[in-house]
Amino acid sequence: MSKRYWPLAFLLSLLVLFVSACGNATSASSTPGTPASFTIVYQPGIGAATFVILKNQKTLDKQFPNTKIQWRIVNSGSAVREAILSNQGQLGSLGLPPFLVGWDKGMDWKVLLASSLSDSWLVSKNPRLKTLKDFGPNDKIGVVAPDAQQAIVLRKAAQDQLGDAHALDHNLVAIGSADGEQALQSGQLAAQLSGSPFQEREIAAGGHVILHTRDIFGPVGAGLIVLPQSFYNQYPAFSKTVYQDLLDVTSYVKGHHAEAAQYLEQDKASGGGGKAAQFKTLLDNPNLVYDKTPSGLIAYATFMKSIGLISKAPGSVNDLELPTVVGTGS
Amino acid sequence: MRISLAAEKKAWTLPEWLRYVLIGASFIAAWQLYVSFGGVSQLLVASPASTLQALFTDTTNGQLPGAILVSLQNLAIGMLIGISIGLLLASFSTFSRFGRYLLTALTAVFSPLPGIAILPLTILWFGLSSSAIIFVVVFGAIWPISASTDTGFRTIGTTTRMVALNLGLSRWQTVRDVFLPAALPHILSGLRLAWAFGWRTVVGAEIVFGVAGSNGGLGWYINNARYFLNPPAIFAGLVVISLLGVLLDTFFQFIEQKTVVKWGMKQAQ
Image (cartoon, rainbow over all chains, first blue to last red; front, side, top):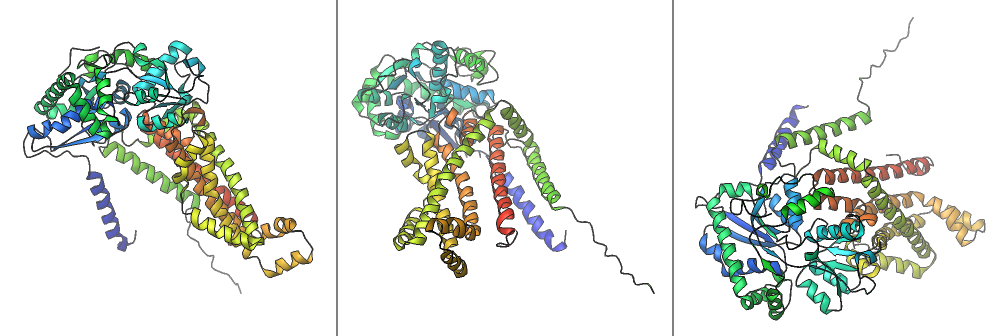
């Protein structure tokens, strides 16, 4: 190589080294034992109640003034997973299947605690569709992601009712809950399986329920709040405080439905839109159960492994749990 | 007396194809080194080895071939319709003044719009079916083709035009037998551009579309791999998309070689 190109080659290699060094280094904050920033990633809907209140009461900000607390709303558990994978978030709220897919692929995240369990409905406005058997190849079903909890429950229902877990795979459309509601109203989707408050509005607009998710796996499968194991090990006191705060705010929500409903109405992006009265009705629903103990992890993992969506199932539920809930759950 | 010419000793240089292969190989080697020693998570960047494995797995289980067929099908149908409409518009523009104004106005307004931008609209009109994607491809293909065909028609030499008139050809015959071949270099470059746009639009639209299974092409394949945290499959999909793009372009180069270059209408590249 001619001598005059040496400086250019040198600069290029410096650039490459610099770019690869730019990474995801979480710098420590001025207070030892707490991170410089902490981002909570969650999804819109009734399940966001605890996060909305935690955000508005500014509990974490008061407890950790040197840590920048941030909140991000994303559309699906897969998006939560990506945020944590790329270090854009630390605490995530998602369903069991996207958590299990991440764990299966080697992510080091574990369950800090479970959040809540509610009943999701497969809603359709088409009177022809009364059971899963009525779905033809052109009847599209909206779910937030093909590996979302709703999509997995649908596959279990397909296995139970149609004999083949993958029978409806080609009908699935990955679409966010709010967009899916619009698509159902305009006839683009034949049915949607999302959650509250979207499904209640769809019923009010003339839809009917084809199946209830609580009938498929039973009363298990509360949403999970997860944290990377490495983060927990690095900041155990911080993590335990977050855990306790989440427990406290859950108690608050259980005892103050009207206030929680107000918060959800004000925070449209988190609540999914709707009036406080509607949210209060949802919170009053006995089908909405708050439970910090994870449940259904083995059942979901075994099912997902049996249909080839993950390659391994956990030996025991403790493999998936952080010290806060280890020894409990199923 | 001996007249001898010193034999010209030409230094042996690498054949061109070998140069490209070496560049490609060193790129792959650098990629593998980065993944192995750069400390980056395998969940963020897949190694060439795992990409190759994903390629093999998904080819043998039929997922990739199926996805490739769907994408190519969407592209082909969209292009056919787009080419026909583009040629019609250009012919109309050549033979009528109103046509010329129409083409200029339509091109000015619509050609800046990328196909993906009108996808939400086409989903509303055509529903969640491949018609929406095909419409978007058609939309993206019409403008480059009509513009280049129009230019091609306009730059046909007067001699050629007068010969056509002399022969008493009908309008349709004139277009088919005289104008189209004469405008072929421009038409081909318009086609090449339209195919390139169309390919990118198809893949992008399929990702935005989010529809599974039988309607899912390569864009859906990549998006699905993302949902199931399968970066090797994402990389494999990207490799396939790139290869197909190269193949399509090479196909057009081949056509150009056999027609306009052979006829001396264009310099070979």
